Length: 362
Image 1 (cartoon, rainbow, N blue to C red):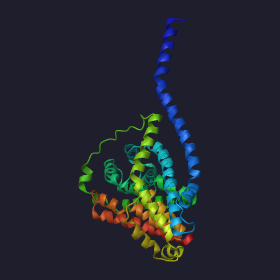
Image 2: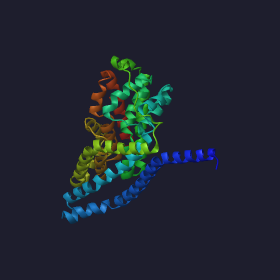
Image 3: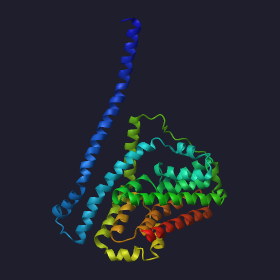
């Protein structure tokens, strides 16, 4: 073996040694993920039986009673929804590692308004968003030269048609309801963006919002390794569940009370398709409520089980998520009252159209 061959062999060995810890770390994480997925599936299949055993066996509550039905619903839905959230948030966390706010703005900047409305609504599904980030996202979009209508299409789609809502709806009600919710939510976001864009409302944004310069995100999606993306996804799970679990527990508790104690005829009379005023009433009740998809879906599940119509329940859910009072208060920092009124009015009309439409055809 020549000196050159020895040198190349040594360099190859050193490179292999340098890579080994990262490769071993990634393989270990993938093995743990595969094991966790198998365990997830095995546990998930036993949840209903376990809830029944705890309710009627361990706690000794009589079967067929209002309390027994409510407790069984609660004990089944809490772990079920938590486990669904862990699975979907982790998966979407991997996707989100490729979409920083800067990349989202880059994709939307320079697009024609109609195309921009469509892209903004679609990007809202996979982009991190909550009420507390409404102001910085809005300012960042304006700074990038994105039309105000496109900005609103994103701000409506992101909280309303998010991955948590879609996966929970799919898991609890099937793909048909999830698809209906996604398509109508996207339609409302796109239509609202288009209408606001036609009204030339740029002067209805507070002047100081145009003077802010946003700092770039410290995360570079192109520089992350797969191991780092897995870490990011797991951190996303901890962050989101750490924020939403109280709303989930509260929502399931309300849903359990409805499921166990509210007569079916009562919900059918109040929120059934025969009552023309059920959709406006549902929107009026839902708008002041502060919750997210994970917290409100258990309530939706209970309402549907008790005879409420799908259109009315969809209108209720959309109003809670899409025009919540806390988000409007936060957006008031950057928007003048006239623009807020147009935003709330257009979204409210869109939600009621969805409610009336699906009550008529389903």
